[in-house]
Length: 448
Image (cartoon, rainbow, N blue to C red; front, side, top):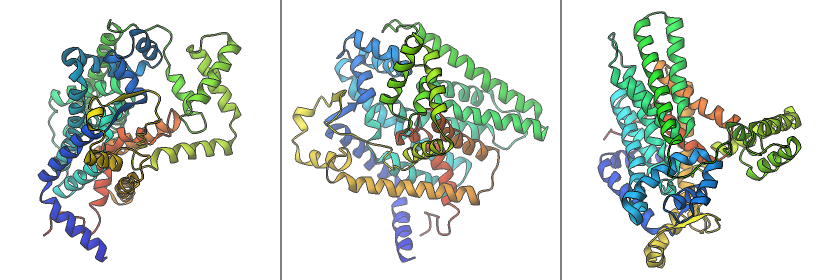
């Protein structure tokens, strides 16, 4: 009890200076950019190297022809490279900082406008400590990019559900459809929040049987905007002439379902081995969907109820156990892009200590930071569990909760098992956890 009281007193004191905390967070984020020697790795590095013309057009064309899901990221980075050339990496990293910080701001505003100051403050601290004071943004991959889009979609959904008897303005409806469509192009799982919204609206219309005109307007405008926007984005991408994309060589959605059926849900080597075997057996290219479907059937047939239950347990554990979201920055990476300032700053004593503590996972002191992040993560999980048992549900909350569960279900069925995949659902998780934690006695951070 004494520890709890001391902790609350500290947070209440610090809570009065949130502006200074934000300032410290931005300084921390800038130090991450400057201090890191390895800036990008794996897929993020492959895309960026192609965008800034380090790798040949042939190399990036082959990569994107298979990994077509990263085409938007490539075009986005290519746009900034065309304008800023060698400075593009710094512009993009600053934008990545803004992406995370804007997501925190939007989520805080959701708490302020649609709940109360207590919940808003808890959202601020959970979001800031779990993702603000971390190096996640520096990856320049699609996981952090989804944060403000998801937070913005939640804000618009709550705005649409504001209690009044009048028909809502068209603008929030159009913005919701457009924003989710943009998120879908970046990372398709973002559409889950709209699916949850759509399901609740349909059920509300059928079961309650009132405000039919209002509900029909909400459903039709958001849905039409979403579909038209997705088709518009896809048309622009399909007709881009910046990088050639080979037709019929793309990894289809069946690949991700097949990958999800590997032992841990992410075993790329096992996936390729299975696809190669089926490709030879059927005499078809490995990218043909019939090959993936045949391999999916084989994997399902080989599972027993016990082994499939074990498979789901492994995937779920891999998905939700890690408060660092699977952060794994080491020098032992095949595809890399190093900090342009590496030669000048890598021997700086302060920056070396900083990156060894906050960035490089193989360094001895990183575990201190990892333990801290795990404590914050456990707090979010506890808050969510309290929310499930102590919250009064309504349409808005049902949508956010359904979207969160829908995301977990998607990752359980398709490619999953990597903790970083949870990042895209953190705006929902943090909001719901904050509602849960606000129920605790003494949770008000504004008491003197």
